[in-house]
Length: 413
Image 1 (cartoon, rainbow, N blue to C red):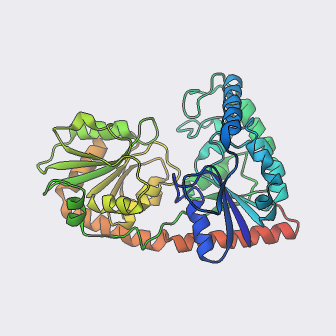
Image 2: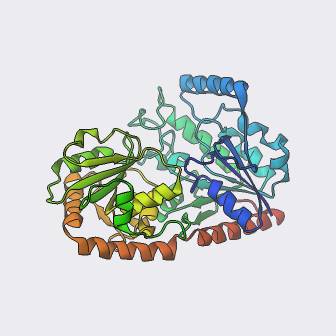
Image 3: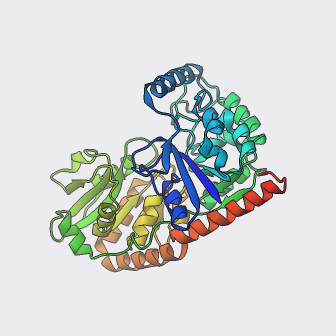
């Protein structure tokens, strides 16, 4: 079997963007290529879809045109060149990952998916809507969008073209024989309720991680290595601005937090977003981390992991923290309570309720037995459900079925 993984980048989000899957397939003796627009690794089997000044110029022109027309992922020409690439032509199956990041034209999808047996992993609900990545409480995606209540949410548009984009997606998907992978029951239910994808073959396959890498280590040793003050409770979270990852609720919670123990805030992603708490808490900003060893060390230095996302279709960081034996606090109304098996392997509070978030954080800080119990349950659940080997087994079974169905003349719907 020869496979091709296609996504926006390789190392950023490597555990869910196809690059780690590409490497796992190679370890099993499966021929694999990884096609990306932005390459950061030195992997010889990962190659760029397009490169150079011409690519940047064309991408810039396409972006300006799409912004002016308030359309998305239609005018980028790069995906149209795939059938002329020998590595695409030699593949037995193509697995598409993030394709709405400013390089792929969904208009090319019918052609590409007819040329090769195809699988598409949805990482968020964008494929189901007229423009947004997460519809939140809006349900217009079920009936055709139009009269959009929020044109400024990701991905923003100037004019309300959501009904037209929704109809365009419906037409393109109808003519695209592709099997759809969803990583959570939450996303599966959305896809089943969508007039755009409900007729396609939908598959629930949760992501997996390397449990030999993401595993419990000595908490105090990890804290010492990161320079955390002795005796501190470490609260870890992803520091990202915007409406999706819940940073504003984390800040509101931390302003209200009242505990006797010293607290250290350990953050991933963007440095400086917790600076208002300097003096009240020790702050260690790791920034964007591509070093798995440092990531695992940070999880193991943690006592509680906060992930109160407002929009989350799975939550890789949640299962990584679980695999290191850490309790995770989330908001209800996303995939996270399901993914963490709350209340056994995590804690879920009402969506947008910073007071409830703070109360649960205070409870876990003040109750080491509860932290330990939930952490132990989280570890057991991660080992049972999120082993990368199980994930690859399920993906390979799907590949085999999709290829066989195509040979038998049966498409992806």
